[in-house]
Image 1 (cartoon, rainbow, N blue to C red):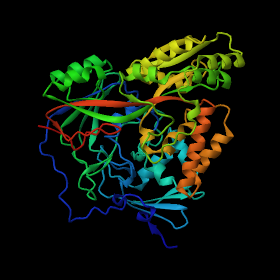
Image 2: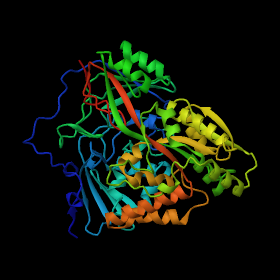
Image 3: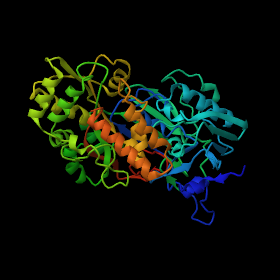
Image 4: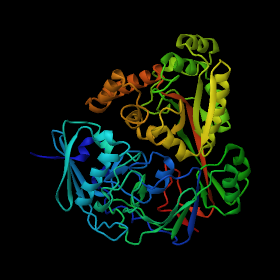
Length: 518
């Protein structure tokens, strides 16, 4: 059977390694050396990229591990550890040829046996392993060939596989049976782990055995030609916003993940600090627990939805750095839809009280599970609590650190009613990445919603992109009408670096390669 090359899928040219040798020379570090001290705003609960759902984990491990495929600067799929990829004409198999000479941080050569073991582990414990539902099996016929065989054609499979939300990063085969959240951080990336102290810091150093991808000349997204210019990266956990501001002002910190709005004017006056904003950082959101009262009652959830003033919530959360935003994509994107807009930002106390009466609500406590690591989430919960009390709901805050709140959301379904989070990486990747949360992920309603699942199945399998977009609109409308999620709006994230830090460009997750200190 004749195979077709992946360029026919309409993906980025970089995917097939067509970066021509006649182009400019690959990136070289203008200067090497130094310690880049980066301040993250939330605690890191693990360095296991398969099983940690926190963005704080991805902030670190995306610089340590690499997958077969990733996304470029514009979120188009590109090859990473794969040299090439071909899809069979019937769409029922994908054959990857691996880049040769790639070594893990322990010095071991990477082969297809490691790729196979990585997929085996991901299929058992990966947070987003549901994307493998249409895969029949995978094979490693020789040391540098890996084949994925499908049960049925899935036009969106490469979109799924290249996602950097919870990617199938390649690990040594010996790590195949590592327990949930217990993976030893041995990857193939430009940085390797020196030390990890929970709630304090992660120390990385340049991996001297790293082999850049010569199909590219520059870093792009999480792929491309990556070089570790600094000797070390110290990723410090600095949850207090004031401490991040003070550290970037004095030079104790080289870069910070978040600068509060109120401090930005002050920092702009400092010639040694450069602010780097990124709009539409995430969709601010709270998720209901549909397994426990009172949020297992649709009328009650609709009462909550009706009571909320999104402007007030977002203004308090972000000091004004926000946009109102219906649903799960950002306005201006081709994939944006306002389906379900009739449920958004109602600010209707009387309607809320009507729904409460219909629900038979009798002053049961409503537990809002939030955290102080992400100030915007904590402030949103404060305002929501007051708005709900104003319509007669007995709202109570339960506040803890970010990793603990995530762990409790997943494992203690009888102890909370609404969980506060932000969908950032997923909306950037596209509708499919976000909708996974509601079709097999941790936002999946209980009991299952057949209409929701049918729309998701269409998003995955329909060959016509326009029909897949229609399915996304149906799914978003269903989620909002059934109040399986309450999106508030989108916020702007402002990061900062010292003026002598060069090459740093804000992305969904901080990238430490191709960054140097003058």
